[in-house]
Image (tube, rainbow over all chains, first blue to last red; front, side):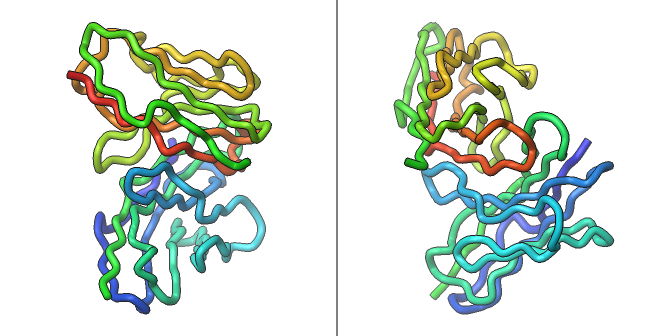
Length: 114
Length: 114
């Protein structure tokens, strides 16, 4: 079965600093990988996804992630944090066969200080 | 219109009550999902409907009964719930339900069972 592990339940950065949120996956077959963001009292919004092809994926709001098969990682980065980036971030995995059964990581809360 | 609308936003019910959660989308999506999210936890898949047919039931207790009257509507009927069922219930939709697709989430119904 596939799974994802997010290192760090909380990450604190200063406004303008680099954002790095870590995600490692486990899957016996090539996975599809996603990053979703959840703002307080809201549903989830897709930031970016990796399916096939280019391993560096660019998403919305200046975020990007790189799929590294050798490291089984899919870390999320943003060069310069903004106060509005404060939210809960979930890495998720699903198989590329059958119906979509997203399996989410435990989430990382990003805190941005002025 | 890229919204998934859920009603009500908040619901308080007793253990003997019967209530329903509603979800609606007008994006022409043919797959709809129910997720359950406990506080400070990731969403967990409950049900998937594809082309109005129940495709996935993640061993959810029978006190939760999903219904998909048409391709735009998804209901979750609740009966004899337990306090541990208190959670945020998220509805989502996607084009057809395959693993590569982006999920569009509603803002959820915050359910409290007394």
